[in-house]
Length: 232
Image (cartoon, rainbow, N blue to C red; front, top):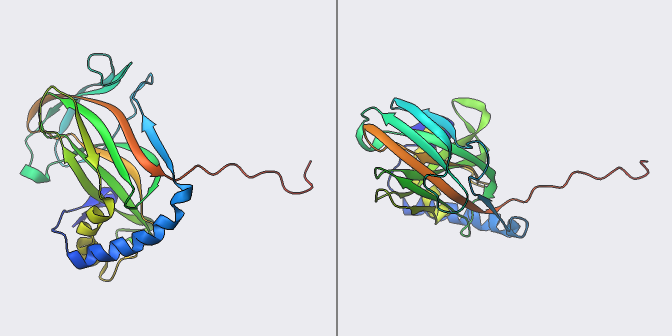
């Protein structure tokens, strides 16, 4: 089943559905000339930027700050110190999100972030918006789902988590979306608008550092409209 605005349960990929996604995405690729920028964030501001999202496991936050203790690139990273309750296996999640400029789904789209943690298991995800579909639970909002990228496998060393082959990842989840809405799904104009870290690493304390996020191509910001003809 789809979980709220941020995602759906993960199901095996049906090859026919993936082909439909690739066809729709090919149309979106026509607009890539207007989406040729890469969005980067180095976590070097004065305040943390990751925002806590939904969770199905209790997570007590001891610290959430900008840190110089562990950095991938100067001068800082973002640091989370959590104590997590036991969760239900692979379905457990505690989400922290970073809103991005719209990144149209295409074969060229990719995202990455560097993560260091005292336990393995932090996972990169991305929220995909289907602007031509309505969420059955909230008809005034577009339908969204989560696609899943790489997971940290090591401890106490920096790993680059990536999301690639986005059309293929999206295709893996369309069968669940079709079952939810009861018909074919319109993927025209699909885009990523949020990168999500599932920071659930098993019960107990964990420290996590995040640095050097990147996603692209993203849609260029539209310049403000100029004055109307004849305006002073």
